[in-house]
Image (tube, rainbow, N blue to C red; front, top):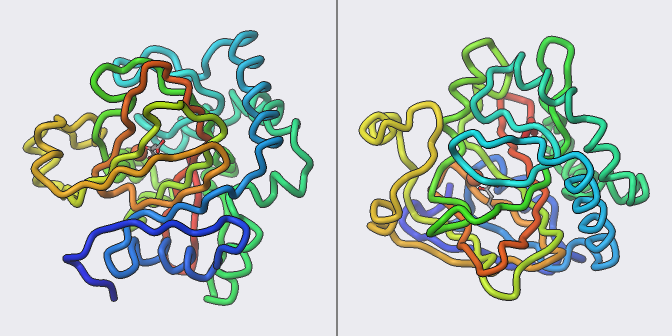
Length: 280
Ligand SMILES: O=C(O)CCC(=O)C(=O)O
Ligand SMILES: [Fe+2]
């Protein structure tokens, strides 16, 4: 068990990261109060530049895979489960799968297989008697990763939120992630801003009573900044090439910048019995 009162983050070198440590972090939602682990320089800059260029090409040609939904202004490639039950999320995944493959085809297959440290994590979880895979529902498989650029969303590029509330929607039609305890977010930074691009994490994990009070039962987005700031917070500048894992059941967000040019590929992970499941 970890210390419930300590709160912080850990920075490791991406080239020599220990997959068992990350597996433990994913299972427990924290290690000794560490709620965010950054693997610096995990992906080389050439691979980042290729993804960045293809991302911009696809957006210019096709537009965003996520339209104006009243929540965030964003350019996005790939589906999100936010606001969807299992079946709708699978259909959305399928709808955008061509763009996702198009984006990742700029890298070689071996790099994509380990883009989120997957090969090492598969082995680490196997040693723990668990299977690590993309979540499935009704014969469909959830999206590999969602790649996005937050646009100008006001005071923050991405306002304080938590990614557990939205899972309730998945539970409605029995999507397997609905039974997960906490939500881990895994993100890979492909492009950053000279200013801004800091991820902020607050030491507060809202429960159902808090969500109801805020009227955020099914969304978990957005919590007022004034509310979040009642709690201790950490700010971590995220740079191109970094892969980071955070307990996304805690309030977190992204600071705004003058340019809003930060591009990240992300997914969520949760544990259900012997299964470790990812979705977007
Ligand atoms: O881009 C980030 O650092 C945070 C994104 C986010 O909210 C998430 O991955 O859950
Ligand atoms: Fe999030």
